[in-house]
Structures are given as C-alpha cells and as structure tokens.
Image (cartoon, rainbow, N blue to C red; front, side, top):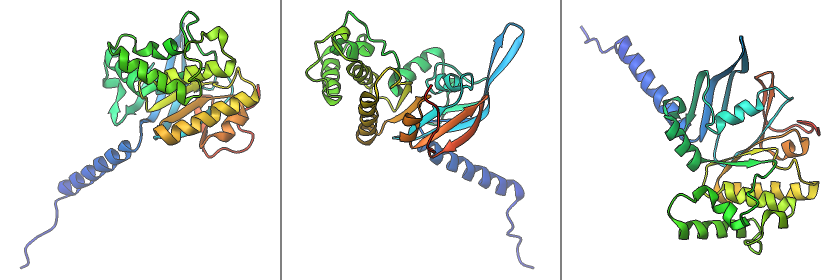
Length: 263
C-alpha cells in the first residue's frame, strides 16, 4: 500500500497564514501609512459622533492624494489620523507596517517629527524669526546647529528663496511665505507632507507654482503629498482623489474634472 503523503489540514492552514503574512509584509513595505476598516468616534455630551465609518486607505511614496468632500465629511479627522495626531476608535492604522496604537505618546511624537511634515493654509510662520530661522525651528532642540543651518539653507534655495534667507515674514509675499512653510515641513526629511488647503490663500498663478513645487519634491525626494482641498483645480492635479461623504469613502481613484468645489 502506498504511503500516506497527504498534508494535514492544520499544516495547510499554517502555510496559508504564513503566505498571507508574507504578502501583507510585502504590501506594507510599499506603503508609508495604511488604514484598514478605520472607525473614529467622538463623544459630544451624551452623544457619540462617528466621524469615520470603517474606511480603508493607503499612501505610497511619491503619491499625490487629494481628499475632498463637504464640510463635516471627515476630512480633518482623516488628516489627523494620517498625521499621528490621533488614533482610531476601531480598525488599524499602520505606519510602515507597525500598528500606531502600539506607540506611546512620546513614540508617536518622535515618529511624527521624523516621518510627517505639515503645511497649513495660514502658513503659521513666527513673525519675529527670519525665513531661515523659521525653517530651522523644528530642529532647534536637536543640538546640531551647523547641520540644521546647512539643511535649512539648502531647502530655501531649492524652493527658490535663496535670496530671502534673512527676510522676515512681513517682508515676504503670500507665495513666498508658503514656500518657507514648505521648506520648514521638509527639514526632518519626512516621507509624507500633509497639506491643509495649501493654496487657499494664494492667487491662481502662485498656487500653480506651489503645485509645481510639490511635483518636483515628489520626483526628487520621493515624498508623498496628501492635501485636503475644496478647490477642484488642486484636486485635478492629484494622482488620486479620495471623496469623503458623511465619514465614508465614496470614491478613491483618478481625479475626474470638477472634483471638489471652488468654495
């Protein structure tokens, strides 16, 4: 009688589990940050508000993703999760394969500092500091003043402000202020730039220059750009548009003309 060479069911399951794990690891290696079935709830008095309702997302190196949707759709909540400013109520957010809920507050702060850069509509430059000093600000406590100054100078030159190093914010135009803010966001070599209405206070020509700068940074630095916007013009420039409605992702794909609005 021929010997029984069948594989036990539990061994087959173990092989499948190992394959799934290896596949997940390979997939996570290609993604900077990933969310799976992410739910975020807030308590307002006696009511529970579900801002995100079990969404999935993934951001890869050099992506340009626009998040659009009406007010109250969950855009800011998603941006906070991507920026490690918050954690999900349910579901999983992984930063380079590691569940962010396993990080302590100090770990999250460190990861945020070295992985994520923030750009805001209102620039948030310190008026008493020069352009160069504003860019240096996130590394002021790192005790590497020479390297920090070299890095900040190089970044300002790259964004076209090499001749404005010693200018104060009130001596700069709106577009120049945003360029300083972008340089500041890059000081720690982040993998992702999170931009909240980055062209909202700029005219169209200046906004075009900022979007072109994003394209250059993605190509040269392999940095991903994720922007929240109401401007269809900005959304049309993105590789992907995530359309949020009432905490659900209604669409995640290539931009269609007219995404967002002009409000």
